[in-house]
Length: 355
Image 1 (cartoon, one colour):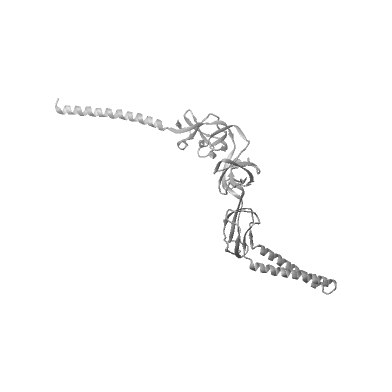
Image 2: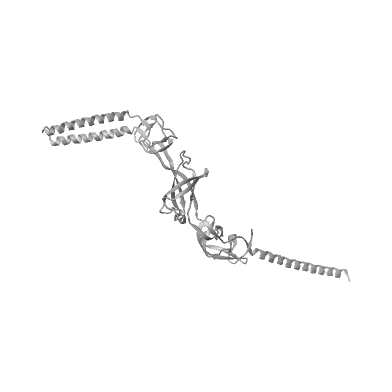
């Protein structure tokens, strides 16, 4: 056998060997791809069981405490402050004098008005006696009576102006801010603020509730209140207002009034939580996690896992209690439902349950 024949045989044998190896590798790769494809056909999901539980329908709502009254008032007369009797933090009562303005010109006007009034009274008395004896006419008597009434009105206004030199508290409360000092020049404009008074003997907690919750409430109901700064202390409140119309978020504003403690523990602006208690308990309520719904609760669609296959079911949702949702129909207790993995899931997909 010559060398060329030997080389040819070797080449043919090598090509056959290479072809066999490539064919074998192709079959192995196809088998691996089939395994991967079969694995990838299953969608990884987390699941939970439909449960039946006794659920309390108590609920909470949060808000900020507001004073029962607050008022920033301005000067009614022009003048200079000559005396100050109140400072920030003082407790004041309605009608209490907080400051006095200089009233020299007002005093002079009041004295002149009083003199004019007394003279008009004397004149009218004299005309009245003269009329009885025929000394004056009825017209002259009537004119004297009009003059008396005008003088009396001017005198009363002068006394009011004189009283306006005393700046008095219009409501009960605490001086939260004082805008004036002794010697301040005041002008009778709405922008000349004098004092800010805040009444925190009672407070209001304004919260909102949804349409299901509002149906369980009525004005006068007692509510348990907690302040975030006093987590171990509970306060009592009473519902004083329930809105007849929902706001832009489709929730209903509720106002709760709370009696403050003697030492005014609660401050306006603090964060508070109201717990609304209801005697209603739903026996054997069928519930699922809120995350079981495809998209949102309003979709009313949930995936159920049966024999490793996801099936999309339409359900009827009831009350939402925290992170749980009541199911009125469409599911049975014990069924396995998908809670995580909806994004890649379609009706009829095989699923792989993961922990």
